Length: 247
Image 1 (cartoon, rainbow, N blue to C red):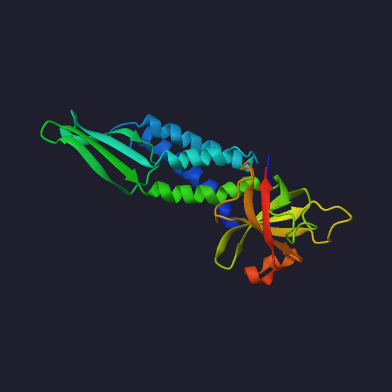
Image 2: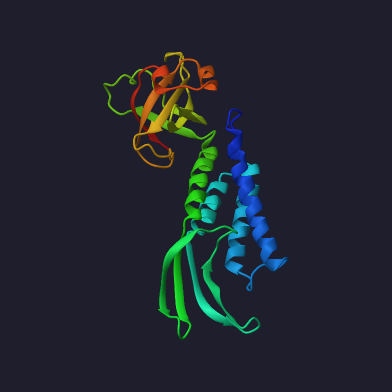
């Protein structure tokens, strides 16, 4: 289970809703409205995965993030072959691997001879990259409420007397034009500093992965978390240092 942060960007909730609507539309288009000459059962299977991811998201089950990634990745390849439709007496492209959910912008190559209709088209669907970007954003929602372990990157750095052993991920934050910052609540002891919140961001600028071992992050102390209700920059917070995150 995970929690939806009270301060979570409400636009993020639209992502699983859009995934569910597109998946449902694709199933209806192929099974009820019969758009297209063939029923693409592989595409329908991906639609079912998309609908399941939406349901799991609103039931607060973290596995939704894996399903959305599968839904997005499956739409990257697009492979067809040319055949003659006996009813229409036309050459049509029959899907061999087509998991798209209604939208595609493709580029690729074809192999074979058009004279004898032995043509295989292999394309890359660029819309799938947009879906992967959305999946990456919504993935952070599955981290809310997750416990992580912290330690200073070096024993003599400025965090040695501040960092607790554990912290809890609370929400995604954007500082200026820097994305992928994460607000964490520090599990403090009575003998430690009274600052209870901090911001962390992976050194490589990517998305935090609590399951990744020894992930190096930059660490900023947050004296007043209400500051984050307004647009902020990195310079608005106390100077930080490097830390290591383990799941």
